[in-house]
Image (cartoon, rainbow over the protein chains, first blue to last red):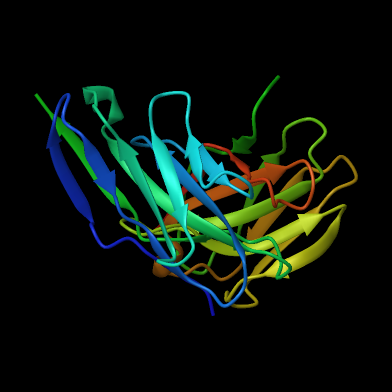
Length: 114
Length: 113
């Protein structure tokens, strides 16, 4: 069975500081990997995804994530956060060849403080 | 283009009642999936429909059912509501079967009292 682990339930950080949100997955087959962001009282927005190719993927608002197959990780990073980045971040996977459902982690609440 | 639209946005029901939630996918998207997000947790997969056929079902009781219509919109039905069904219900659509990721709607907040 596949599972997604987000070890940090909350990450407080000061504005303009760097941040890393951790995500590990367990699967015996290849996976597609995603990060979604959820602002209060809203649905999920796709932040970035890894399907194949370059293991480093970037979003338009400065986030990046690197797929590390040996460590089964897909950590999300941003070199300098802004107050508007305060939100809940979810890591998710889709098994290749095993249906197309997203399996989500429990989420990490990023709180950016002045 | 309109995104994924869900209705209603909020709903309050009494235990034992029935509820129908509706979802319209992005134009041209043929796959619709439903997720339940309980407060403080990640979304849990309920159903996926692709080209009007059920393609996947999560670990939910038979009280939960869904269908997809010829225009690719979808309904999620929940019978005999329990307090534990209180959650944000999210609909997601994708062009194909979903490998490239899904676009989510803003959800329906269901409160069972």
